[in-house]
Image 1 (cartoon, helix red, strand yellow):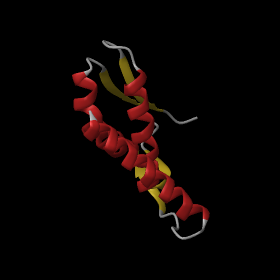
Image 2 (cartoon, helix red, strand yellow):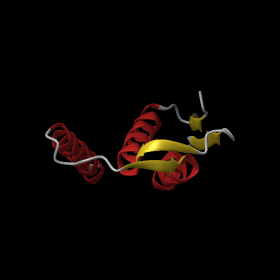
Image 3 (cartoon, helix red, strand yellow):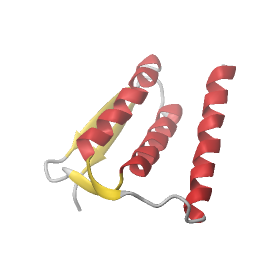
Length: 104
């Protein structure tokens, strides 16, 4: 339990440091086209075991027209990773977390 909380705290501190760098203009964004499938795959690979251990289904739903999104690959993944971790943490046992993407 202590190790898990230490990892969580480390992620929070790293996120805050990244935000401070962005605010100070020290870390420029590397904007490009990011395949949504690749992004979601990395997130599921990272959080799939945690979700399964809690009997939570982690699913993806990518519309045919949502192939890519324009942004900074690292930052986009960081955001989706954080949102997914929070969703898993607050989901009910036997529940589901779904990552979905569609073009609007």
